[in-house]
Image (tube, rainbow, N blue to C red; front, side, top):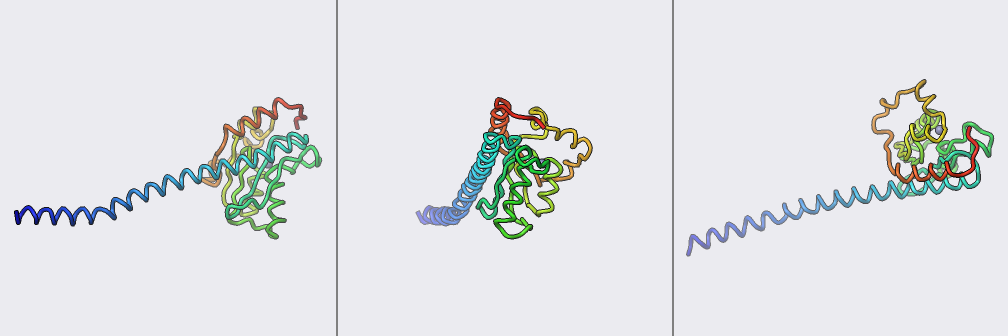
Length: 194
Ligand SMILES: [Zn+2]
């Protein structure tokens, strides 16, 4: 009986010692999954705002189906869409328009700590603009090849400049399916190619 109680005591101690380990382990996993889900949701939500911005541009016949939003500390600080046709400006890409808007909002060219969400993989002009603005991360929907399939010349310039493999994790794809739907909508609409 005495031995039995001793073992019971040890088992009890072991059980109580394990509780925090089990609890922490479970809550760690839960936290990781929550963060992962939350992050995924946030990325796709921001991309949907970029799609909304691009849709405005399609409906106004401003240019291609390219919209961008810039986010800092969870808040939208810049937005813009492609206005190449309506502004007669070859540099009025969605990313550049959003960078200009964010600069006005924040009162600085320095967009350190900002993330850009853009419906198409940026061309080299826009990539460099993001870098000059110190943007920390680029999320894009459709790829350079997708841009080519709806008539844009990104691939031509990409063959000249290349170097995307050197960018590491600076760029990441998110919401490609939703952005392909946007491209389909653009393709089905009346538009001028350029
Ligand atoms: Zn561009």
